[in-house]
Image 1 (tube, rainbow, N blue to C red):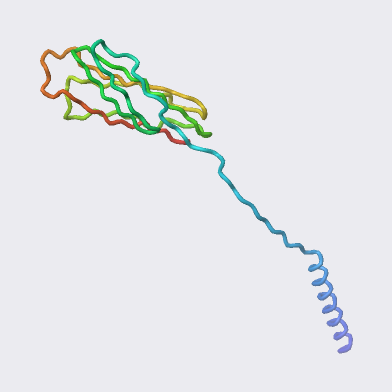
Image 2 (cartoon, rainbow, N blue to C red; image 1 turned 45 degrees about the horizontal axis):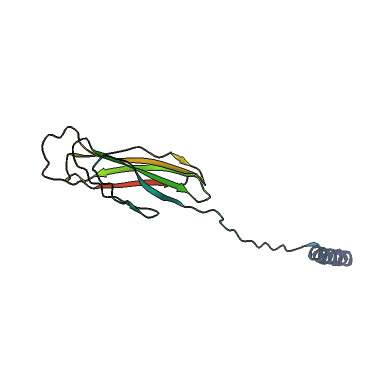
Length: 163
C-alpha cells in the first residue's frame, strides 16, 4: 500500500511537471508600446480693426491691434458725433470656439458725455471661420454744456473657450 502511494505521488508530481512545461510552452508575453499626440490647434485672434463710420470733422485715429489686444483713440467734436469700429475675429485653429464672456467696461471716472456701445460676435466660432462685432464711441447728443472731463477709456474682454 505504501508502494502504491509512492507511485501515485510520483505520477502526480510528473503530471504537475508536465503541465508546468506545457503552460510555459503555450504562454506568450505581449508588449504594448504607443504614443499619443494632440494634433489640434487653438488659435482665436483679432485679425483687423477698422473705422466703419466717422462723423464729419472727427478723427478715428489709426487703431492698433495684436492677436489679442486693441487700442484706438477716437476724437469727437460735437454732441451727436460718433465713430464705429469693426473688429474682426478669426478662428485659425482646428477646434471650434464658444464665446464665454464679452464685457466692455468704460472708466467710471471718465466723461459722462462719452458713451460706448457694442454688438456681440457670434457665440459659436467654428474652426476656419470669422466673426465680427462693432464698438461705437459717441458724444452724447443730449449734452448741453462742455464737459470738464473730456476723455473716457474703456477696458474690454472677449473670451472664447473650447467646449
